[in-house]
Length: 603
Image (cartoon, one colour):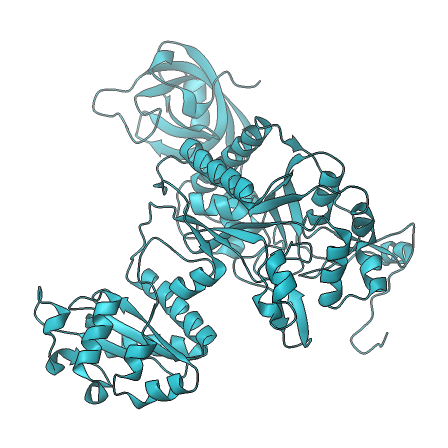
């Protein structure tokens, strides 16, 4: 090694020792007679002193060095003079007095400051990602990511799981997003696909008798662009045999609880992860990934609204619709613009409008004491006072709150109020930013209707087991009400992972594939390897997958998963560092039998 010690790991125990360190010049300060340098490596910073009386050669070289130069230094450790200590860093009580310096490499002036966390345009950061990774924020995020993955590996290994790598080149069997295709040179006109997930492979491992499998898996999806989505991502992939839902949910809860306690212990966690059915989550929070760090639940006030005197409420309820409401703490103080903005959000998400009731009155008084003069609402002249009091009581509203109401069909009402709940929670800072509010969502619908194809699709994936009672009794009349044995783990408004109990019977698997539109031939073409394996003693099995990128971003309190990935793509799926995707030579295309057509050419 070129160094005997790491910069950030030197302390008072090293006082008097001669050591050698190497790293980057973080900051240089010339104090006239003495030159101070903060030297940085992955482990931290140490203050270095150049004194011409101790070593004039080193001092002269130090006069020329600049930020981000790479240097190797030898010297002795001493205490900092009293009053100059810096207790904000681990090495703040000591400094190094240089006896020899070697410049290992010079550096151009970086396009942004590496030694401070200033705002830098993301395109510049990604183009010079190797410089961005030197900054403390990014180094800390990658260290956290390492700690998370290491804990997961140790946790599952200690419970007799086998870590098994599955192929990156495999058969294209798109069930959700588009596959990334890889042309075969050996078999012209044929293609591999990059895996969207190891779903079928981990099921085949269960059929191979592995029983307990996990993988830190790389996955690829050619999805439509979103702000917080990557074409390649990493997930924890887990599969077990001879289990039911409770076994897997208990494993997930213990894994994530122990992970956070050990890796990021400052977070507050629930004593037990609550469980909600999909229907319950939508009904209470308007979302299947609710943020549980604050209340503001949706309440059905259909009967009260019908009797309130507001004609539009009666019209909607008479036609089979419902009315639901949320109570916003201190919302009566909202300005007209704030209410207008919320109304626009409601309309853009499918509502015909947003009804509001501000509850004014003396602080400390009860909503049962409300008078008509206390009600601030565009509907005030139509509202029956007793109905307002009953609605406020149902919602648990207080004086100073605002009631937001939406009247429409159930799916619209729940969705709109769910969006408003999340928006208001953020606007009013209702979330405890030190809490990880985990929960499980279960009993998702097995199928969802796709209007564009005029048919049903698997909500989760086509290998998810149905609730057999629903499959036999509900399917014929109401396919959308067939429950699956799928589950999600959610935290703070994000879906962190999902999984299901799988189908382990060929006949049932073929029935599912047929229902969602696969002919016998197409099912065998795409999934024949899995269907055949089901004939050879497939065990009951299930599992889950959780996003590593998302988990680390949440733990790091980063707004975007790009901040916890070493070399991410942009929102437009470009790699600015290597300037890809890029064209390849015609010779390479000829070798694999591919021709690039111009816009005017037809296939």
